[in-house]
Image (tube, rainbow, N blue to C red; front, side):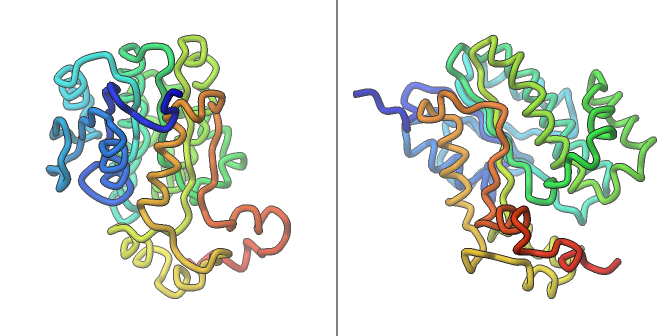
Length: 271
């Protein structure tokens, strides 16, 4: 019987592998037999097949890292990201525009049966309300034009984090059909509060009281390992018919909200 959960013989790229969900994903996929190539601005703390230093805001650095890894690439995990305390345009460059450039660079190197998974966020859950602006940005041809669009639309970008996550969700949905024709799947997850080094940054922006009071139907924050398990599932053969999906890994927050058990207006921190 084939191992639909494993990654033996598969060349895998994990961005943001030096910490948080990216590190947990790189560790998990490596334990399941994957040949893990990590891309981050700082070295990883865990054993990987290869480490490439690259800033995802720099398309030339992305291209050089991908060239050094080589082909084929069987799985791409887009886990890198900046918190909302970073400058909004830099957040957009790393969280979405760099993610998109990397994905579009890697996709031609992926054989049929490959998969891509991206970390979005519950912070992007209102993407439908911002769809016109998201679509305009997604229609830009490259990072330079995308950056110019973001600079010209500060009201849409806002603090950068939420909008970047909206863009990831819609990007995965928009690309799923064309990539499916090449035998490649693409999905995203939207975690809720997770115990990573980013948590103090969210507390700084939204307020510690808001983060403490954020509804957690399961009664606690997620761990990076729990999110990594879902990412590994989505890029494995066990999810061979799953593509174009944004999976809310938020411990029931979104489900409770959509069924009227939570009042979203009461959750919005005062500005």
